[in-house]
Image 1 (cartoon, each protein chain N blue to C red):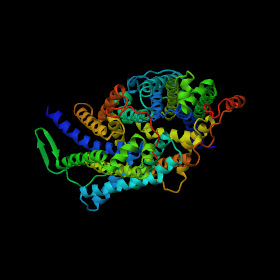
Image 2 (image 1 turned 30 degrees about the horizontal axis):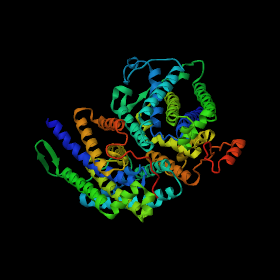
Image 3 (image 1 turned 90 degrees about the vertical axis):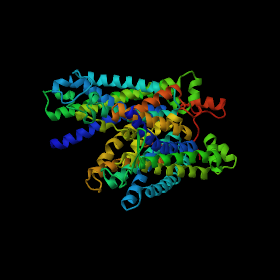
Image 4 (image 1 turned 135 degrees about the horizontal axis):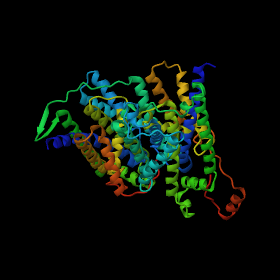
Length: 295
Length: 335
């Protein structure tokens, strides 16, 4: 039982990191309909920004905040300089998938050429361990869970109650109708990319803190798990992404405790396949038809 | 010509052949029919492993230094045929799960997940295909021909690849230019129109998924037999992207174009990087290959999305005139 509970504890931490990232991934997708496969690379770059700041003497949490801003700006720049021009150039949904993969590969491998294939680590301490019954969580892990809670609630409240959130939801349902109603679609899309990049930044640093060593391709490798969580919850639904993250996080860590730890991601995938066979639209999203790219 | 030069040229020839066959498989799916198969490299890998296991013999025979699921020693060409059958069967399974029920944007993502998970399984379940180390000492069918010298054997394998490439190429032309090819293009261009004509777009997608999977497996089988080894690092999921780049650079749906693209991207980039003034650090060189591949894809999608040798627009002169009279705005089904 102790094994099970401590595995759930690890699962909650993984779920927290997944939730931050999956919400960012899915929010941007719901607004723009671009499957951003360079999301993992943005996470990695932000992780390295935090690494350089951290090794320059900055506290890791301040470095995380800086990485979040960097992530937002990188994501915004990618949209303004690459993705949006390609969409205006007339590329379709699948063409955009190829473009985001290209950007991801270019970013990952440029970074790899720069920093080399070695492993990196932050100079942060995990902090005091807290015991809750059989749960053992370090201060660092508790902080990550707290950040995840705050950010996901903020996104949810923002989507529900602010003008910007309403505009984003409007764009998600029908971009041209939203524009016809006076929503400044370009600005809303840019903001969606920015928010998604901020979440990628926080998620990237949290991931690298949690797994303690990372390389230039760690973010892209983790992206597959993020996609599994986002698709599981119903792609395009931030609420669903949180639920998907919790399911994937806990299933993988409990599976790792009882089974081959290297195969934990396979479990997440198994859950994904079963859910998609029963509910092809994911847990939360309505069965929508494919939409056009939002401009 | 020195033996080393000959071997170098032969190697490039084999790689071109293997890449062209594989790229045609993906082109049938992505270029002609519009199925986005992000797990394509998995089917090449399955072909490679199957050919290896069908020619290596039992694992215990070579002292058991590598473990794999099962092994028999079959004569040429049975391992290659077996590889294609297994590739087709696996494609059918993956296709049935992903293609029928899921929205097409979900399909692409699920394929990506399938590809990654397959790599993880192959790496961590050692008894399956010897884990991270991969399989080695895979026999090459030409090695048994002791009447030839080592060099002649290499060129025989080149000839085998060339012959298979010609056969696959002829098959591609026959398929794409047949009425069935029109169904495939129609599935890509206008699914409701194809359905209205009583053809099933879902079935067409599944069929090209299986055929493309078999061609991917064929390319993998040839590659594994030539290199003599096959490991998970050969088929990480970004490798699929190299085939996509080949199809985009060559020209989606264009058989000759894709062959050109496969030669340029699959082999040309790797060779070009060797001669660039960026030093000889292997990590930097390998990274540059990826960066160039990515930049090339983006450049082509911006400036020349139809590729180097674009798919020819099929003309049906008299019928088009008739339709133009009947319908003020015709819907182009066949391109």
